[in-house]
Image (cartoon, rainbow, N blue to C red):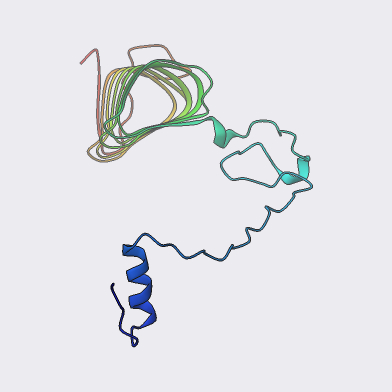
Length: 186
């Protein structure tokens, strides 16, 4: 009843057969098998898995004990097994025996912290014990009870409250290097 023109192109034939519901068989494409691994490979997201270990874990590296609290994130509680805490958001915590505390701008830390080194460019409020070095950047604000091993305050940085070197008694003013330092006695 219907006849096709003899000069139809191949594309027109395929389109016509699709409209009519006729499908032409597709050639099978072989899928290669995944390679077999004789030993686990190093994967950067799994820091303790190294090829030289034969798949066994190495002791935990310090990089795996790093906690970053990003902007617009709020964290509260207690942190006990952290070598480095990097704060860009808001934390209300007790931080015990950390190696390093770094508060970036606009980060805000409220609570207590016992660390080796502290670098403050944001805000700290509470009790801070830095047994090593305490650096208050130009944008940094530190308020509360502060004890330190060594101290550096950049011009514009604020240090206010009870401030004392780690090896001396309380209520002694800290020497300021261009920043503002005020003790509770003032």
